[in-house]
Amino acid sequence: MSEQQKQGARRRDAFAKAKLYVCVTARQDHGDLREFLHSAYEGGVDIIQLRDKKLEAAAEIRAIEVLADVAREHGKLFAVNDRADVALLTGADVFHVGQGDLTTPQARRLLGDGVIIGRSCLSRGQVDAAIADHGLDYFCTGPVWETPTKPGRAAVGLELPRYAAEHAGDKPFFAIGGIDAQRLPAVLECGASRIVVVRAVTGAADPEAAARELRAFL
Ligand SMILES: Cc1ncc(COP(=O)(O)OP(=O)(O)O)c(N)n1
Ligand SMILES: Cc1nc(C(=O)O)sc1CCOP(=O)(O)O
Ligand SMILES: [Mg+2]
Image 1 (cartoon, protein in one colour):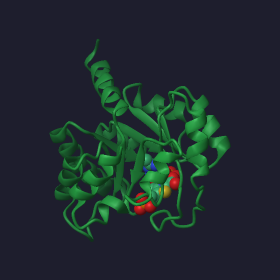
Image 2 (tube, protein in one colour):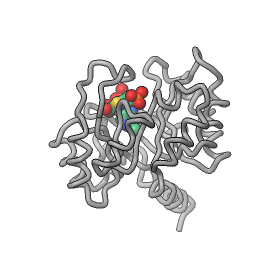
Image 3 (tube, rainbow, N blue to C red):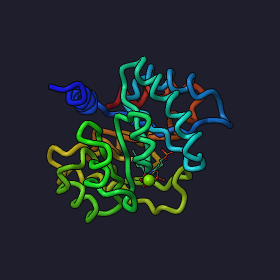
Image 4 (cartoon, protein in one colour):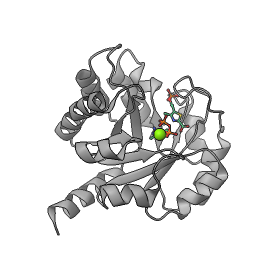
């Protein structure tokens, strides 16, 4: 097995156990990124994605280099959003795309087989397509509740993760959007077992404790 194949296998082993996925900005306005990342991973976050729509590529890469460094220290996964060039340059473990972004074959062509690729889904049709897409490693269903983190996107409610749970089979999926410790039991009840959150961890006074609380349910 080549080094690249071994790295891909390690990523897939870690991903198979991943339950709690957090998206974070570079945090220029609200605290030190490195310190936040240590706390989140320490609290049990499995994957952290740098999702900062305002950053230009150079600044995004600098922030992701910090993320990659902390992820490696904790033996955890890190993700890049939207930009395959940035994912390639930073050696991302996970690459996340939206419906209007690269297709799975396009992303695979650039990133190879060793990278975990995921896509956002907002409808049953998109969920069906994600399940049928054998090159895609996971998908997300949301926003379950309307959220200021993704303004202008209508809530899909618990119905979409419930539909995903009934149809996904072995394909991993995450529920996302407005999830916190109070709402998590309802998400789990509809059959989802993995979640993505932003504010529930990034907005907490103690991110490690907030992550630990969520992880305890999962
Ligand atoms: C893990 C994860 N899930 C969903 C999203 C949202 O992706 P997208 O719909 O492309 O929207 P933007 O985040 O790019 O604004 C995500 N980034 N990560
Ligand atoms: C980044 C993102 N994507 C969504 C989707 O539905 O695809 S919802 C969302 C934001 C989730 O933030 P919070 O946990 O703060 O509500
Ligand atoms: Mg996107």
